[in-house]
Length: 114
Length: 110
Image (cartoon, rainbow over all chains, first blue to last red; front, side, top):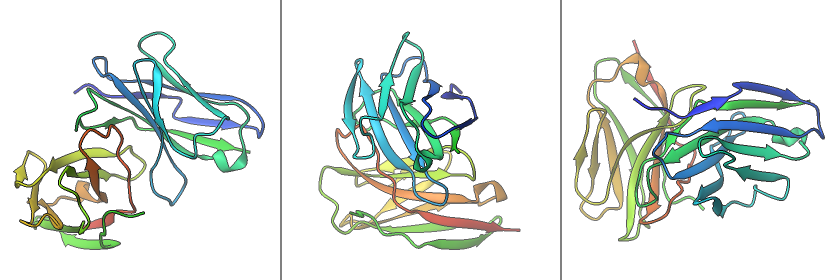
């Protein structure tokens, strides 16, 4: 079964550094998402992306965050200047379409900000 | 602003049916009920969804009450691999995102 692939599985960075988390969505999918899960807490929506632009974002997704689909296969999340509170598991997801389509999630990137 | 209410945790014996309840008393006519689960350290996984009719697939059955104010996810023969957090989600028609609550932590006991 096709799957969403995320790299790296673990990323350690220093506070204030920029990080880019990478995702390869399922090939025929059109909608892309980033979620995060702080340890012990619920999975939180960050952003959805369609047709090369953000379709919706949450309050968490501030100016420090950006997303990009640079080459038609990858989907990236950039955090410009990481903070300690950005430490979390970040999940990428994709879906075939927006109308009640199920989301397929990757296995996540564990980001640790020191 | 929680749209669903689920028990915090449940236990079920291996081989038995696991019945996970969910209350969604304020559900609107255009909102679907979705179930996802998250096995430890993995990404969420879609299980099933429905609007008003009962649904069944290879993973589970979804029973929605006639007034749509509650539903039950049934795993017919639970295995140890079904130990996970199960999320009941109400999703408006046409909304491309899903919003997770706290879910039910299901422990399958050997």
